[in-house]
Image (cartoon, rainbow, N blue to C red):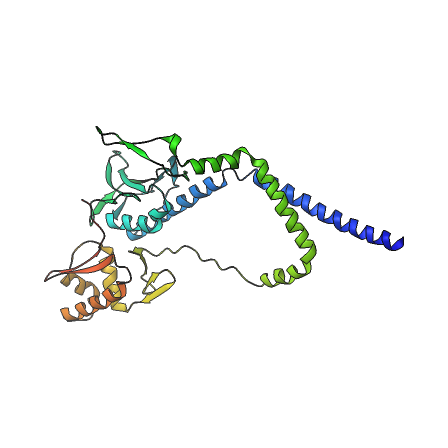
Length: 346
């Protein structure tokens, strides 16, 4: 009798403990579920907001402005974000295009997006381009620089919060416009979404079963799990801040460190290579005469030859060839121009 009583008490104690853990985990599960309704939507909006602020920050750095502020990015309507600046500034069309396509890859947005630059005072659109997944990108007015002025930049993402794509569309033969029928949007995904949100009890049952299994496993194999958890505590998590270096095509240009950064790889530059590239970068898309380059780079070194300049440009080209869209063009007898090579649609 004593043995049976002891065994029963031990079993009951373990059962009560596991039941208590299961109930506590279910309570946490229900509390967390109540806050998840808009979590994915809000997270997506915040991520794009931060990326757009980064684009504004790098535009100011490329313009030589490291003091004025990038004002808070506002979502003026669903999927449309407005970037504002504290002061007037100047920017290069290609730089804005490269920054946007690098930080906002179109593969992450089903319908692509449109970027338009507007005059703060008049409200006129002074520049813009469209990145699309289903048709060629519209990249107009390449190789130009916008004069100093007060500008706002609008980023518009069609279907920004939509997870489904249109099944088919009708084309009006008179106007050529496309009409999408909302009731025909991917019915299988619609059924799945309806089942998920109209019958939450199924999700709760699955959650309870999963939590019960986890609780039993913890009770059964707790001793096995503990060493692994202690061992994991010795590993530190390394985080790195977002770089403030200006963009140069797909590279980041660390002028002070004399390096080109591409992902986790760094390419070292000599003193003269860095100076030549810095002059070309500050005048991106513009023709820089040979005499101007030689005067700015070798101003205190007496007489030099054009052959020296050509040698440094040749070395720079080899170091930039990891970005196939970036090149240094030689205009025979005149000078050099740093530019990008992408499909140009007038």
